[in-house]
Amino acid sequence: MDEVKGENERLKLLLARIAKDYQTLQMHFFDILQQEKTRYTDTASSNQPKDQEPEVLISLSLGITSIDQEVGKDEKKNSNLSNGRLENEKLSSTGELSLGLDCISEPSSTENMRNASSKNSIAQELKEDQQPTEIWPPNKLLKTVRSGDDEVLEQGPLKKTRVSVRARCDTPTLNDGCQWRKYGQKIAKGNPCPRGYYRCTVSPSCPVRKQVQRCADDMSILITTYEGTHDHPLPISAAAMASTTSAAVSMLQSRSSSSTGIGISASVPISSSIATNLHGFNFSTLSQTSRPPQFYIPNSSISTSNSHPTVTLDLTSTAPSTSSPLGRFSSSFSSTPRYSATCLNFSSSSSASLEPNALQPFWHGYTGYNNYGTSAYNQNHIGYLNSTGKQPALQEHLFQTYMNMNQNTSQQPFKETIEAATKAIASNPNFQSVVAAALTSYTGDGGGNSGDQNQGVGNSSCQKMNWDESLRANPLIYQSSQNGIGCGSSFLNIKSSSLNSPQQSGLTLFPTSLQLSAATKSSAASAASADNSDLLKL
DNA sequence: CGGTTTTGACCGGCGC
DNA sequence: GCGCCGGTCAAAACCG
Image (tube, rainbow, N blue to C red; front, side):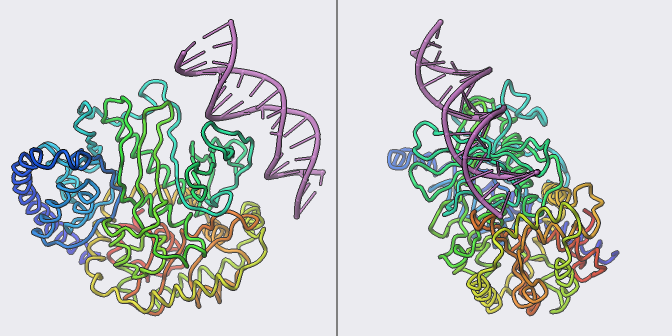
C-alpha cells in the first residue's frame, strides 16, 4: 500500500506537471486562436455560422489519448475552426483524463479557456475537489457566476428533471432492468404513435415513471423518458440506468444552476459515460452486436425551456463516430470495431495486469448465480427475466464470435494509458460518486449480502443460462427482455477476455465496480490491484 | 387469482 | 371561459 501510495503521489505530480504544461500550451493556443478567429469571422463566417457558435459540451467522459501537446494543439485548432464536437474530442485527446459532469463551452474567451483547461486538470480537480463544475452557456446567453449547488428544483416551478433516451430499438420498449407497469397510453400531438406511460412496480411507492414513444420521424427510434428516482434497491442493470439518469440529471442541474435559467436548448455533443452506460444496458441486444459498429457518441441535448428540464441522450446514430473521443477510445480499448461496443471498456489497470486466471474467483462468483433464487426479490426478478424461457443459440454464437474478436485483438499499446486512466478516474470525485451511486443502487442499503450481490447480476443479466459454462466459454452476461420484447440489456457485458489474455481487459464501468465488489467478497484480491485501491475504497 | 394491459374518463395547466 | 393537450385514474379485459 505504501508503494502504491507513493506511486500514486508520483503520478499525481506528473499529472499536475503535464496539466500545467497543457494549460500553458492551451493559453498560447487560444491566443493564436483568437487571432485566427478574427480573420475567420471576416472570411468564413457566412459559410459556417453554426460552427462558430460556441457549443456547450457536456462531458462525462473518460478521455484518454495522446499526451502529445502539439497534436492536441493542432486538433484544438481544427476543432475550433470546425465544430464543437471536435473540440470535445480535443479535450479528451490531450492525454488528460476526465470523468466528470463537466460542461464546457467552446472557449471563446479567456475565461472559458481557463475553465476548459482546468476542467481537464486532474491536479486542479483534486485541489478543488467537490467544487461544482463550471458550466458555460453559449455566448449568446447571459452568463452568470455559479452561486452554488442550486438545483433545478429551486429555479422556480420547474418539475422533475427528466432524462430522455433516444435509441434505435425494434421492440416496444427498452429493457432497462426495472419492472414497469403501463398505466396509460395517449396519442400525443404530432405523433401517430401512442405514448405509453409506465411506472416502476419494483416498489409500490416508487415514484419513477417513464414514457415510451416512437419517434414520429423514424419509427425505429424509441424515445424513453425517465422521471424520478427509485426508492428501492435495483437490479444491477436498473442501477446502471438509475445512475446514468441520475448523472444526467446532475449534469442538467449543474448546468442549469450555472445558467440564467432562461430557455436553453443547446446541442450537446456528449461524450459521456452516461451514454456509454446507456449503450451498455440498453443497446446491445444481440441483433445489435451483429450490426456494424454502433459505438458512437450520441448527440445529446439539455433543455430547460419547458417545465420539465430534460436531458436527452441521442443514441440513434447509425454511423460509427470517428470524431468522437469515445468512439476512438472504445475501438481502441475494446478492439471490437465490428461490433457494438456497448460498454465503455476502459480497462482497469488491475485487469490489464491480471494474471490470466486472476479473475477466476470472480467468475466463480458469477457461477454462483445458478443459486441466486433465494430471496423473494430475487425470485421476483428471475420470473421476470425468465419469462421468455429460452436462450437462443444464435445469441450464444454471436457472443462467442464477439468474444473471439475481442481475444484476437491486442490492447497492449494502451495498457499504460489504461493504467494511468484508471488511477485518474478512481481519484476523480465525480467518478467516485457515480460509482458509489451505482454501488449503492446495486447493494441497496450498502450492506447487502452476497445473495443480494449475486441476484443483482444474475437477475438482470441472465436467463436460463448455465452460468458456469457460459461464463467460461463466453463471459458475457446478457439479458433477454421481458416476454422476449424490449431491447436487451447487456450493460454487464464484461468482455472479460482477460480470462485468457492478460492484455485483454474489457471491464465496463459498472461491472468494474461490480467486479471489485464481487472480488472483495470472494476474497479474490486479484482484482484489487494497487491501481484499484481507490475504487476499493468506495 | 393476482398482476398487467387497455382504454375511456377525468383533471389541471396553458394559450387564446 | 373555452378548448387543447399532457398526464393520470380506474374499471374492464386480458393473461399466465
